[in-house]
Image (cartoon, rainbow, N blue to C red; front, side):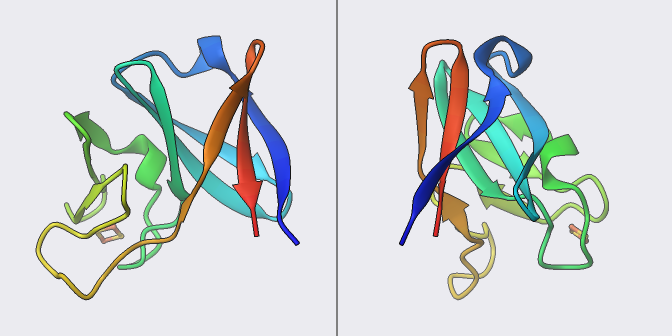
Length: 102
Ligand code: FES
């Protein structure tokens, strides 16, 4: 059964940025794209880099360690159609951002 977990304040993740958050026992990479929030598993599937600390261009994040790129809205890797990184639904409740954990 899924559950919603508060992970950040809206003000902590301004448009065009990423924020590394902890949701229970996992790292979540939260991104604000033009005022909408998206969340991916925060650990890059290549070698464990911190996706939230990557450069965000449009809706693409580039892992800071070796440059793998993912669409933050879908988790889709930009070179491999087979690789879709786990993502989480988000919602805003007042001043806080929540993610839906499975
Ligand atoms: S750890 Fe992310 S690209 Fe290598």
